[in-house]
Length: 241
Image (cartoon, rainbow, N blue to C red; front, side, top):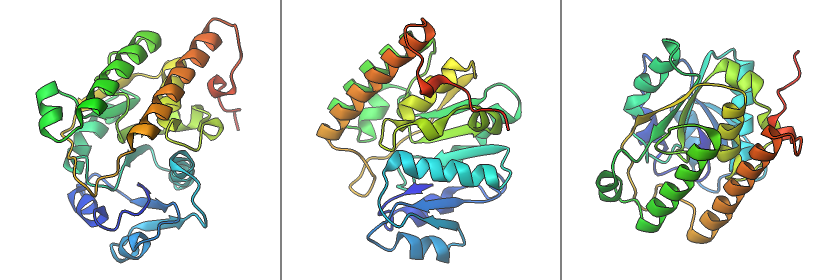
């Protein structure tokens, strides 16, 4: 769980996690200014604190390093903002356990009506649709939602993808899926209803524009790397050992 000021939602998210699916919950706190750490420790979560705010991508880097160090075979990332239905986690991990996928994304957009009824702003829905269509075309995928904060990875993905080279900001997510596609990992998605309410984290319109432009830049780097025009460190596998 990459967390920042999640005191209002972290307990509800944790309570929904199926106990027979989860061995350990690691929460990385990115210098929250509320009671996130206090509540996480009361719940018995493994808590790692950043002394200063480093950004969403940097938070995930710490999450994945910690999970790999603890020997995790399957790693699930879910925002602790109660936006995603954590009860569906066994469905996502099942595709990895049975060898059908290496990466599974929780898709918030099974249909337009359902997404909007759940509270997704219309501008966010349209931007998501446009970006996802372009990403599917460039990366050769067929996902319903490239921008979900509910994802599951097989260990081999995290051992291969050079995520330490990624952005410390929100575009980390776009970089990671582009990397997974570049290295030939099988990416699938599962419909997961999403809730939109004041306490659920969401970037504003300006940050969304920056994120969208960053995603397009990642796709350009991917194309340049695949065609041999450039050699981007984003798409070089981690050195063995």
